[in-house]
Image (cartoon, rainbow, N blue to C red; front, top):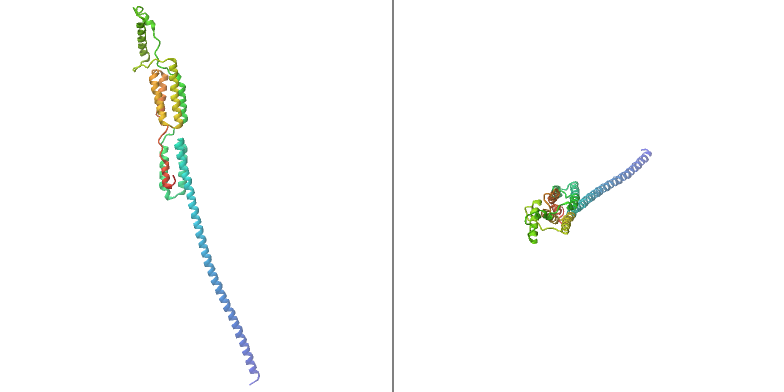
Length: 299
């Protein structure tokens, strides 16, 4: 055997050993790389779960925030609706302002419709009914009533007061034997003739009121004007009882103390009847009751 053979075998062994060592080292590096990759994958999976959890938490927080915003918006809108209804009631009860009250209630109804909340449906129905009830009430034209009453005050002096005319003594003086009568008999005849003439001139079927002096006539006119002024004050304060009683008293006086077959008197009475047919304080629905359906403690 050649001496070179053992050397060759030894060298091959060395090469093989070195190859095995290198392969082992490579295997170790691969193993470490695999472990590192697994670790990274595990970390990535953990991070992904963490991210998913964080995302879910954020979504939950956003949802809660949206719910709070929605609830706050509804609370704010409900407060605004309550304010509008209360303002409408205030306009009705203190100012009898039907027009403004309707505007406020319609605005409240728009707010309810915008929310589109099923739990407010009963309140919305009550609100719509209140609006319908108010629309059926004729508004009181204060300006027109006040103007008509002012005109009546102006017309009072134009009315003819029912008074006895002066005695027509010429009739009695031409009566036979009148001059031979005593003075009290002549005076009584004059009074009877005057009364008969009063009945013919005024065409009254009722008892004739006592004769009025000029001062009493002025007093009657002034008091009639005061009654009309009192009715005018009642219009401004929406006091229907005072309004009706004042105009009825004025009508009674005109019927009793003024000439009925006068065109001025008839026109005056016609105006009084027209004014008496107006209710200056109509019955309004209690619109505050609807708030119990919106919020039990609202009113």
